Structure formats: structure tokens, C-alpha cells
Image (cartoon, rainbow, N blue to C red; front, top):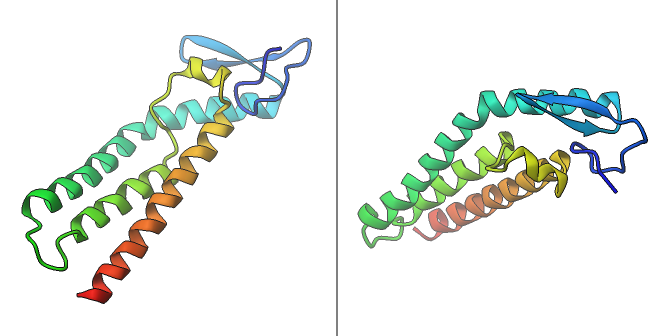
Length: 136
């Protein structure tokens, strides 16, 4: 049973094709075709920005680890970095995944999972920052 790469539903007898760079993937309807092609265009356009934001988030962790000191605010840079990385996943849900993987997990599923991870990272970073600032 083949599934639509966008929504994950079972494909009809005559599936439509979504063109992805030099390949095409089977989708169940015109809406999924348009959304798949739009996702690929946005992925191509915004993935570098997502990587840079996640890299900046990692720099926050490194800065906190190496230069944070031992005071009550030493973890603040790490939490800011976590917030930046969380916002990157939340706003730019284009994770490191090959388009072939969409046969196992649909684009909609990957986007939903990325946003859940981004929300969890962001909310926990805000809570940790609030607790840190409250205790300082």
C-alpha cells in the first residue's frame, strides 16, 4: 500500500505526481500536489536560515559552558540558545531529512513533529529563563 508523501493517506488508483527537483512523487490529490511542491520550494529557500539559527543556538550553549562563569546567571546564554533553536524548528520546519523518507513519514507528519519539538524547546527555555532570572 503506497501512501501520499504529503498527507500519508492511501493513494488512489491513478495518483497525481508532484515534481520535486529532478524527481516526482505520488500524491493523492491536487491540494497535496500543490502543498508538496510549495514545501519543497520553502525547504530550498529557508533551510539555510534554519541551520544558521540552530547553529546560533548551539553557540549559546558553548558560550554558557566556556564563558558563563559560576554565578546564578551562568546558564542564561544556554537557555537563550535553546530558545533560538526552538524557534527555528517552530517557524522553519524543514529538518534534515531526505525526500525519500517521506514515504515512511509524510511531509505533514514531519512538519508537525518539527513544530512540536520547537514548541517544547521554546517553552522550556522560557520557563528556565524565568526561573533563572527569578532566582538571581
